[in-house]
Amino acid sequence: MSKVRLFGHSLLWIFTVSIAVLAVLVVGVRFVLTDVASYKNDLEVYLSQQLGGQVHLQDMSAKMDGFKPQLSLTGITLDELNKPAKTLSIGEIRVSFNPIGFITGHIVPSQIIIVNTSIKIKRFADGHVSIDGLSSDKKDENTSGDFSWLLEGEKFEVVNSQITWQDDMLDLPDVSLNSAHIIFQNNGQEHALKVTARLPEETGGEFVLAINLMGDVLSTNDWQAKGYF
Image (tube, rainbow, N blue to C red; front, side, top):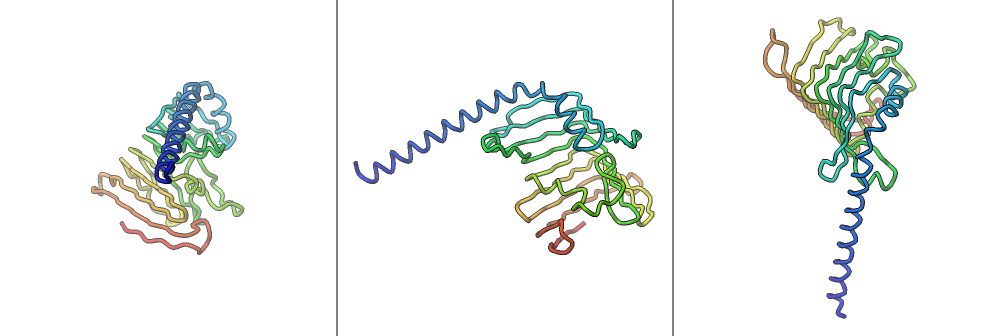
């Protein structure tokens, strides 16, 4: 057998095996996804422990988005245990995963999409920033910040939502942005943030913010950024 023919047979064999492995993987993932609703209570308990509040899920389902498994959580509410009046409500969260992670055991969301929510971001007098319902009112010097989890996935997106900015540091009136669309993407130490939203009716117009960051953004000075309004 000539080297060319041998190479062709080897290439065909590798391609066939790859297709077979992919097919088995997809079937296996689909089988797991069909039973995902039975884990709703377990997920509520886990999220409540991780977030330090009471998490409720109205419904949970899963499907394949192309070759990527996608988990859909709807009707989510988070009540802070020490402040019951602070409730974060989210219409839907879609979480996509890399199917290879199901083989390696490293199951980390590759994309998170939050749909139809109202987010209140507050900057305190000491300068630190938190999200009502998701982070503490007090600055923790032992952590890298409230938003380090944003750097763990490939893409984080907020769609059709309202954002309210409270600024106690400058003692400014609250600013609400409607129909907000936020995209945060990661590629190693390169990060991109884009925000588009409608300004309040009395102001009118559209708000657009784009920022590109490079480096270790969790450090104090080992990073740089460029942005525009």
